[in-house]
Figure 1: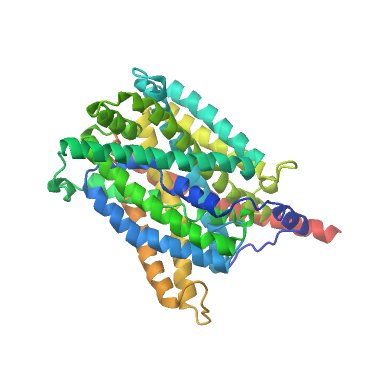
Figure 2 (figure 1 turned 135 degrees about the vertical axis):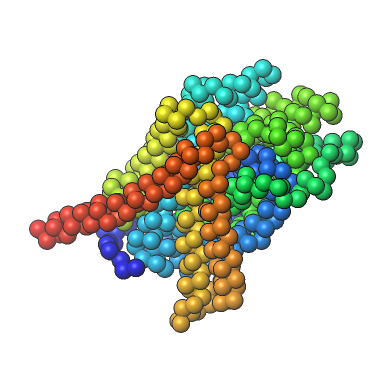
Length: 484
């Protein structure tokens, strides 16, 4: 498709971009990958579909996650710099496709960050002690707690990655310890009492409708390796640091996902798993069986820190997309502003947080959905928007590999073809299947309207900003330059 608008950042704007500080080392990246990729909040909604999801995890790790690692390393090597999925699609397919890829990546996080907030609410109430669990279903409480956490994350990320990264790192450590406690309790219960899980639980159910939705959510749960490349200008020696960090982060995240899903299935009946509180439910159930009820509150606190780290990682990372788009003239230029003291894209961070909060309020106020149904609807639309940039990412591998002027980067042509085909096919399948409603959805019609309407709305809005706003802004710049 021909480029409709071709713009280049002006000299002052390029100078602003280069003022970003390189503060992320290798282990900062490994921990960032763990906290961004391994999200315990998606495990309960997946495990609720039974043991068959373990096979889906393995399939997704082989056909989606491995190609994702190949794509991130290869594309970051060929096209280094700030922007990640935005930059890669732009370089390979042109300006509009780059903008659409970055736009979907950003807007998906407008949906995903609120799900992290709601998950935080569902878990943190256990810190208050027994009897407070039902607070998570109170809309007023959920909104207030989400707002407080969102404000905290914005402040920390505005102050800078040099500070905000410590919440990311604490979140990664909290995630690892929480997963270790969960899996350790599961092994203890299994050794002492055995398990009621049988081989039949791992078979495809007679009605696989709900399982189909979980495949898209699993692919969504495995994204995150590309996150650091969006902050490419803030990584210390990225060409050397990134490949090893991707490998370590990927292996750790994959093992944690499978272990957590199996443990949840052993501890709690799939019919009793709550999509918001399933992890703490499992720990509470197993702790009571081994006489360690005291562990529930500390575990909930640790998991709450982990969730806050997840929210910080995705809020801070995805806000770099409108920041770069602001520099590239497709969105208001003030989105490309850098804080004069902290050298962070503060305007983009604030806009992202504001829109996320508005979406939560809309779902609670106008759809009448409960907290868990709102969580699932936001999550499903986030899956669609999140995976669209991955179509571009894997498509870029295929285009590079088929190019007549192909030159080897990090990997050879055969590896790029295998990773590109596998990743593209799996991503397209994941997008399609998530349109099947999950178990928590009460009205299929309203769900499909939300999914199709939301997808078309955000893609249409991207076209408006690029073709209408971007063209007008370019014309104003040209007129201003001619007047000089």
